[in-house]
Image 1 (cartoon, rainbow, N blue to C red):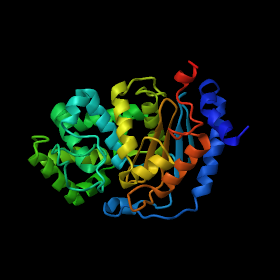
Image 2: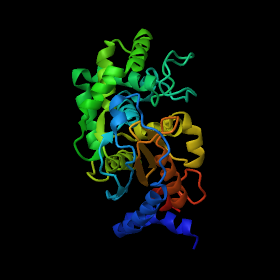
Image 3: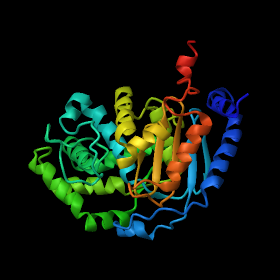
Image 4: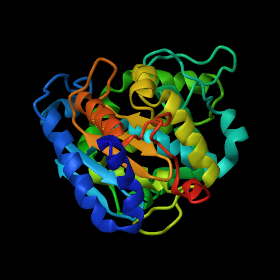
Amino acid sequence: MDETISRRSLLAAIESDPSSTDELQIIAKKVHAQFSGNLNGELADYIPELAKVPANQFGIALGLPNGRVVTVGDAQVPFTIQSISKAFTYALLLDMIGPDETAKVVGVQPSGDPFNTISLDGRTNRPFNPMVNTGAIAVAGKLRELLGADAFTKILELFGQAAGRSLAVDEKVFESERETGHRNRAIGHLLRAADVYALPVDEVLEIYFKQCSILVTAADLAVMGATLANLGNNPMTGKRVFGLNAVRQALSVMFTCGMYDGAGEWACKVGLPAKSGVGGGILAVVNRQIGVAVFSPRLDSNGNSVRGQLSCAKLADDLGLHAFDALNHGSSFLRGML
């Protein structure tokens, strides 16, 4: 049997035989070893605290539908979630007010501009999508309006529910972002001037800077990804975190907009909904199958983890995970109907 086909069958086998995760760990270890020597890329030094992160850390974690997590390398090392948070706050807003009202706050179109561009969609006078800074700050402002002064507390609780454990904020990174985030402050004022929200800009940015400063591990992100893959239910706790429609739309926008200016190349090479963060994390999701997380803080010119991208591409290739791969038979639910 072709090796790729054999490996691809692992995800189906895991659902009925948890011991199959042993072979999956062997594959993850090989991928980790293959790219451990790649030291290309630079730290996100425009945030002073991120410039202090040990540059050569590297961890891989896979969150499985049976609740187990396969980890390799520095998968238990905490780092700040940064822009990966945007996918989850967007899903929260979708759950709260639905897609039609959310569309009045932020669109779903790729922008073609850098993630921190200070601009709005000229057709709607709203941010292009929630995966760039303008869109994420708009989402933060709307959540602040809806949830009041406890907005961030509720956001942090939701992230913890998705990860299956309580999470915390890296206060040093938060302060570093707040002190140096002048470009994001300009975005905040642009949104306020466009009547996206009617709140003091600093109140909105405090939520945004804090959500980006939440500490996670690659193992946490893998569980969060598995929660999205599991139709919004955390496979470790069995608790529902997000609604079905919110998951579908969030994953759709992640697929088209989640990897900054590298989204098109990612869609072709990896073919999975994903979100990256300048803290070095990448989260990819295979619908109804698996959450893939990689942590490696050396970034390329687009702000995406170099080893993270390589690892995800290799895992997708080895396991046939690409959405349009001929070997990807889709969800176990549909396979059971064949």
